[in-house]
Image (cartoon, one colour):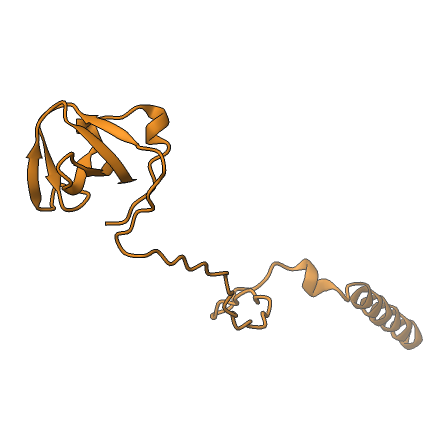
Length: 147
């Protein structure tokens, strides 16, 4: 009987060993055990790149101060209402004189809805386009002026 008992224990041990070998990936089948410390996902490594300035082409335009290129053609406009002649293109500039309505003026330059005009008496200054009557074909020929 001793031999039978020994064979029985041997079979039991062998079946247990086979069972354990068959379950080598037993840890993968079990649910994960919580960790007291959270594990963060690893981020991909990035090699820093030092930015290099890009050079853009620079265009410098030199404009002579307050000069208007005279044209051979007389560019004429008419004052609609009595209006101010100013020393610059805007209402913040000083008023030189008041020009009566229906006065014909010579258009010497324009900038942002303002015209450089020459009065019949020779005075020059700036007038708003809103107070002048200028034909569209003439307005297109008036050169751009600087204050």
